[in-house]
Image (tube, rainbow, N blue to C red; front, side, top):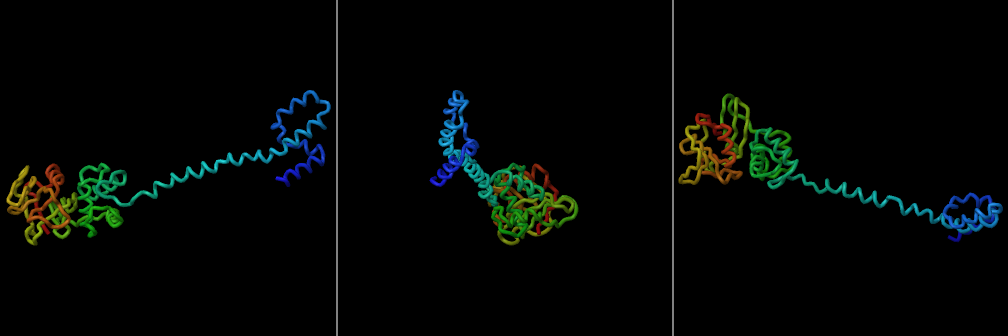
Length: 275
């Protein structure tokens, strides 16, 4: 500050011409009353007093610095980058949103039944994901991680065994039920077959009878069963695990069995191929 004041004093000392270039004369508005009365002699008395009092504020007129918008610009950018870092690439039952909706639409496109896509990762979507995981040969956990996403993108679908007509195909190795029409897989359902080898018999069979309701048997309740081999049927059940668990029947979920009935996917006379 001493060096600044010394420099300013030196400028004043050099003469009135330098003093007249001060650009802060408006800040000293109170002395301007002297300009009217002494308009004939304003150079010696008034200018020296105004310059000595106004030359110090130029350092304060740099109050422009605190008014800079640096604080506001730095804080506004932080929230904008935060949301992407918190997004999770994993989808599982209970999730919802656009990512789930896109997943559901892709699964339906591939033929995996889950009802109408609605953006909610519920039980139907879970079983559709498990069915795809079974077909792709990856972990059957119903969670959509990198491996499952890759299988979805690659379009994993079970191969068809039949080439003509409407045929229900049950894949014992993959544990899925496919509805095939003219050699093309139309619908795929998560299923669970007989836990003991042979209890779900391999071969080509036919739906011979059906019951539109609950059938109470010695082995439990069968929901809307469609029989294709003696007492062995495709039916709805409360539990459809990722592995063979039945006494020989082909289990699907209650909503899946309703879809098989309402969509006419396995009427009496439909061939059933178990392989």
